Length: 113
Length: 116
Image (cartoon, rainbow over all chains, first blue to last red; front, top):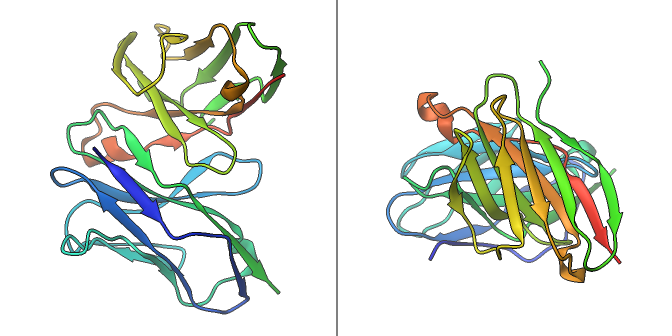
């Protein structure tokens, strides 16, 4: 079956530090990959996505590259801000799956000033 | 343009009761999916509705049922509530015929259900 594994959290960083959140997946075929962000008390917001191997998704300074050979989609940001504090979810959507998302367990990020 | 709206925002029920949660999709969207997010976990897919029919279902018991209305809004019903049903219930909407944008789901803020 399909599954997504995220690095264990929580992650605490100082402002302007470099961020990496690891994500690996298991899926048949060629899924699309996503990062969603959830701020306290809110629903999920799409942060970025990639639909095929070697694609790089990017948004708001965050980046992730679809690596088929390592089945990974790690999230990175060069300089985090306090406002980036949130829970980050890696997810996949298998082609032909009627847009059903399979999520990882989430990584809580706290950025300290 | 209103996004996905869900009601109520919070709900407290006791074991054995029944609950109905509501979702209005983003304007122009015709497909609604429901997810359950337990505390500290990622959301899990419950089911999806399109053209007023359940199109796909996740690994949830029949106690979980739903409905989609002609205006594309949707309800999630849970019967015989269990303590383990306590979770944040998220609704997501999308537009079926929007090409690559079909994959872009918009989520509501959720309904926090507590079962005592």
